Length: 137
Image (cartoon, rainbow, N blue to C red; front, side, top):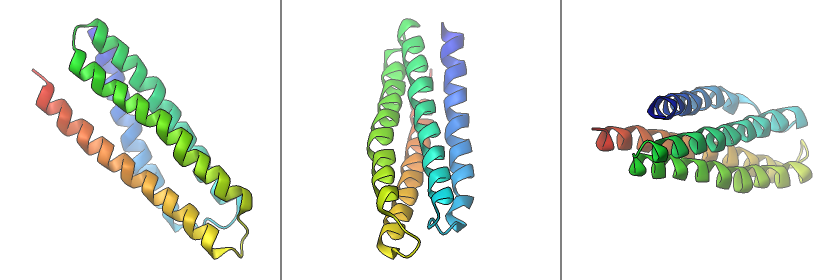
């Protein structure tokens, strides 16, 4: 079970790193066309689903392997994926529903949501990596 837990941890870190590096270049987009906003929203949705699935598998695996603290940490990451998908992707959908190419306020709000999601990912990734070094034997 520990092997599955370690593999899920590596996959989780890879997903977080990929998202961090993949979402950064998207800031050059104007966010004003439906294609731009739909792609960014889709990327965030896939990312949060990956966090939920990978974090849940890791949490369960670590818990069954007797590593409760790391299991709880991965469970929290899965919870962040669930909350991010509900809150951030939901807000992106709301803004996208009313956004037009001329609506600078909605475009700015969508861009701020994009940046906030990226910053949240960086904080979680750094915190997770530092935390893993502190609780590892």
